[in-house]
Amino acid sequence: MSAQELDLRDYFRIVRKRMWMIISIVIVACVIAGVYSLYIKNPVYEASTKIIVNQTPTQSTVGQLDLNQINTNIQLINTYKEIIKTPAILDAVTQDYPQFNITTEELLKKVNVSSVNNTQVMTLVVRDNSYPKAAEIVNAISQVFKERIPSLFNVQNVSILNEAKVDPPIQPGPVEPNVIMNLAIAFIVSLMIGLGIAFLLEYLDDTLKTEADIERYLGLPTIAMITRLGQDEGKTSPADSHVQQARKAGELDHVTAAK
Image (cartoon, rainbow, N blue to C red; front, top):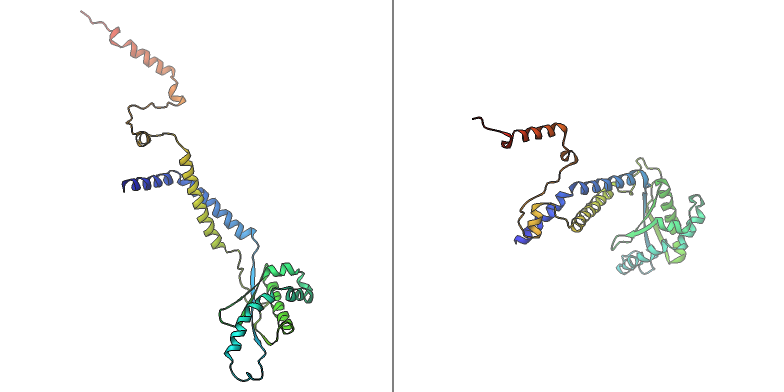
C-alpha cells in the first residue's frame, strides 16, 4: 500500500514539475483546432428528403392489409438504399441536371441513405458546402429515383414524403465543422500528449538534483553540499580587498600588549 502511495505521489510530483509545459501544449493545440474549425475548414451543410416505396399490390390483396407484403417491402428497403447509390440513378441525375456540374463519383461521396428499423421510409441525405445546392441535389436524386425505380422493380407506388426546401426562411447551420467537438478532441489528445512527454522526460532524466533524490535512489544520507557560486560572487572588489587587509592587520598576531 505504501509503495502504491509513493508511486502516486511521484506521478503528482512529475505533473506539478512540468505543469507549464503541459498547459502550453494544451493551449496551443486548442488554438490550432479553433482556428482550423472557424477559419480554414469549409462549412458543410446537410439537406434531406424522405421516400416511401410500396410494391404494387395484387388483386387478391387490394383493399386489405397484407402483413406479408409489408414485411417484404421492409426487407426490400436495403435493396432500394443500394440502388439509389448506383450509376443507374446517379448517372441519370448528372445527365438530367447538368447545372450541378458534378460527376457521378463526386455525387456518390455526397449521398447517404438510411432507414429506421422496421419501417418502409428511407431518408436520403446530401452534404455540400452550399445548403441550396445540397437541397437541389437531394430533391433531384429523389425525383430520378421515383421515375426510374418502376422500370427496375415491380413498384408503382413511390412517394416523396417531404422535399428539402431550397430557400427556407431560416437557413440551417452547417453540420461540419463541429467546433465544440473539435476543441474537446484537441483538449483530450493534447493533454494525453503533454502528460506522455512529461513522463518521458522524467524517465530519461537520470540526474540527481536534490538531497531527497540521493536518499531516494541511493539510500545514503547527505554529508555535505557544495554550493555553486555565480560569476559576480566569485569576484572580489577592491573595497573587499582593503577590508580583508584591515582584518589581517587587526589580528592578534599584530597586536602587542603594553607593559
